[in-house]
Structures are given as structure tokens and as C-alpha cells.
Image 1 (tube, rainbow, N blue to C red):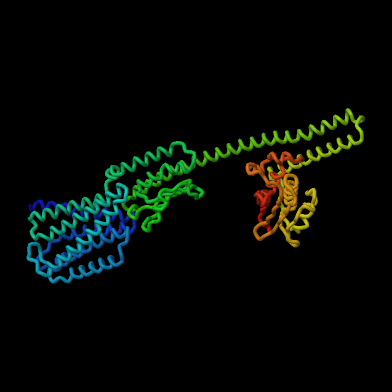
Image 2: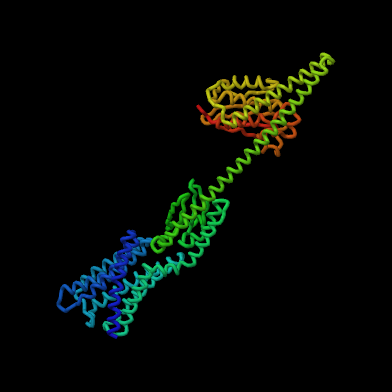
Length: 567
């Protein structure tokens, strides 16, 4: 029995010393609070084992002092272990203060003991009381620490959960070893063997929990690893949107690191997708950002994850890099797709524009050609009234063709951005009166609701083109009276033209500003080309603003011109 005890004791000395060395190396590498307290806890145990090698001869003050230091370190261990668990989730202030007070009191009591009996000697009542308090202090703190680690591991991924529970088991086994050691005074008893055996068990469970071998980590994380591999395989397949890419990896990535929430943003900082967004709002969640080319991955993890799941968190770098490649591939695909669609749309518009322009020009050209043929062949046979009618028709059609050609030139210059916008202050009401007088068939049917001294800073030519088109359309497709309102503010110039006609049919509103687009009602009105509103909106947008439509009350059409202020 004595041989077994001695063998286990020698093994424990080597194992605890190795554990303390590993803890110190990990602290040097990590340099965080949790690693510091863990290194302190296991260094204390290593020091206790090394100090136990010093013999305690009767009458030697130095050796007696070493014995007290050994007991003091044993008092200190559960406190340092408690502080280790508190590095992840702070305990209550009262509990923390009580633990400090009890540890300090017990430490002082250690050095105040009159004598410390050697192994096999009878324990005085004072020392027995000290041992009882010491065991209770150790047991309570160790059990609290072990319980906190065990419970916190419930929501962690496999590797972190098993590491935390191995450390909790180590704390529990060491506590039982201490209780058994205190229950016997004989090194050869079966209790002594049990105590040393539990101490040996605890050191190996501590070692596995603190720094598990790589092969063991791989075996533990197999389930999560398979999910991530499946997600990576899905990343390599084609996706049409960045949201689809992100959706494939959110849950598997969160599972491997035990994230409570996850979000992915693209290179522009826009949120692509998120998982369990409310999960990141818990007070103890820690945000871990992984920057990669083309975006950022943010995981809200448990405070235990950076320490117990450090390798799992490093996998986020790999997953993030692959997500970045997939997002960039989707971005390039979308850019190519958008460019192709834009080119197809531009080509379609060009063909439509050429066809419609040719059609619109053919009508007045055919009419003009017919009248010219009539004059050429039958001109001498026509009386004066017939000649006048033919001349009026020719004038009307040439005016229409000239107006159409001018509008086409306007559109080509606007499309080529060859029209210069030069805002300047103008007296608004007089200028609108000039436009209305030139554009309206009956200027008296137009009400200009503008202050006499109102000054607007706009491009004169753009304003002329827009308002003249709106007023002409109000008479051509609507009904008088027509109301023109305008106002310059600090931020915008606003103008509206409202008529009292039937308004625009709801089904035609989406196509209202399209080129050569005319409703059935507008086709009944003579002289229209279907380009006026398209030109007016193009001028408005070239000016940095827009032209909008809404129904007037109780009936009619109302167009709003909004331009940014250049004051």
C-alpha cells in the first residue's frame, strides 16, 4: 500500500509540475485574464507538489516555514480557480467580497497557527478546527467553480463543452482527494491511496480540459466539422445573390463556434444576412469580427468561447475567406448580368427609338409629300380656297416635323449629357408669364400663383423647356383652367402645373414618361409626339431634380417639378 501511495505521489509531482508549465506557456501566448488566472491556479498546485519534496524535520524552523507556505498555497488555489471562472462571467459583488474576505482570513490563520503537526501526530483542537474550515473553504469554492464551468458548457460547441466539463471534473476530483487526505493521518491507509488516485485523476482531467491533444480536438469537433464542410461545398456551387451565399453558411458557422448570433456584411458595409439577430443583444455576448476581402463576418459568442474555443474561432478566418470569395463571385456575376441587361436594354431602346422616330417622322413626311405632289400635278386646277387649305396643311405638318426633330435633338443631347446646366437667379413670376404667353393657346386661362418678388436660382433654358412642355400638355390633353405654382426654399425649388381635365388613366401612369408613349386618350389629341414629358423629365434630372405626377383633386393632372436649391 505504501508503495502504491509513493508511486502515485511521484507521478502527481511530475504531472502537476508539467500542468503548471503548460499553463504558464499558454498564458505567455494568450496574455488575457482567463489565461493569467488559470496559470496562477495550476502554478500554485505545481508549487505545492514541489514544496512537498522538502522534508519536515522536527525542530527545523525553515522546514516548518515551508510547510506553512505549502498550506497557504493550498488555501490560495480554490480562490485562484474561482477567479479563473470569474474571468468569463463576473460573480456578484457581495459574493466576490465574501470570497476575498474568507481567503484572507484563512491565510492569516495559516501563519498564526501555533504549531503544525507532522504526519502521524495527534491534531490539537485548534489545528483540527483550522483543517475543518480549510476543507469547507476549499470544497465550497471548488464546487462553485466546477458547477459554473459545467453549466456554462451546456450551450457551447462540442470541443468547448467537453474542455469545460473536464476542468469541472478535475476540480471535483481534487476536492474529493483533499477531503480524503484530511480524513486520514496514515500514509499507508486505503484512504491515502484513494486520495492520491483522485489527485492523479484530477491532474489529467485538468490537463485534458486545459490543453487537449490535437487528435482529441479533431475527434470532438467531427460533427461541427462535417456541417462546415457541407457549407463550404455549398459555397462552391453557383449562387445568384449574396443573400443566398450567406444563408448557406450562417447556421453551420454559428454551430462550430457556439455563436449566439451571426451577421455577414459585404465590402460596402451593407448587411447581407444575419442569423438569430436578437441573440447578440444579451449582456455577456462578445462580438468577434472577422475581416476578409470583400466583407466582414461578425459572431456574437459566449464569453467562454475565446478561451475554450480558440481553434474553433480561428476556423472563422477560413470560412470568412471562402465567404469573401463566394460573395465576390456573386458580385462579379451580378455586375456582368446587370451590364448585359443594361446593354440589352440600351440596344432595345435604340432599336425602339429608331423605329418609333422613323414612324413618327414618316407620318408628317408622307403628308407633306402628298400635298407637294398635289401642288405639282394639280396646282393650276386648284382654286384659291383649296390652295389655302393645302398651304395650311403643309405649314402644320412642317411645324410638326420641325418640332419633332428639335425634340429628338434635345433627347440626343440629354442622353449624351451635352447640355450644360447653369443655374442663375431669375425673377420667377415675370419669367413664368413669358413662358405661359408663348406656350399656352389661351394665356388668360392660366393662373400663375407665384409671389411677385420671388427669386429662383435655376437654369433658364431647362425651366423654359420643362414648363412649356407641361403647359402645352395641360391644354392639349387636359382642360383649363390651368394653375402654375412655384416657390424657392432654402433646399429646393418646387413648381407644379395642374389642369382640370380627366387626368391620366391609372394603367398608363407607369409609362407616362416613356418616349413616344401615348395613351389612347392622348392619341385623340392632334399634334402630340409622345416626347414632351420624356424631355421635361430628362431636363429635370439633368438639373439634379425630378419630375413627378399625381392626380389632381377633384380631377385633372398635376405635375411636380423638384430641383435642388443652388442658392
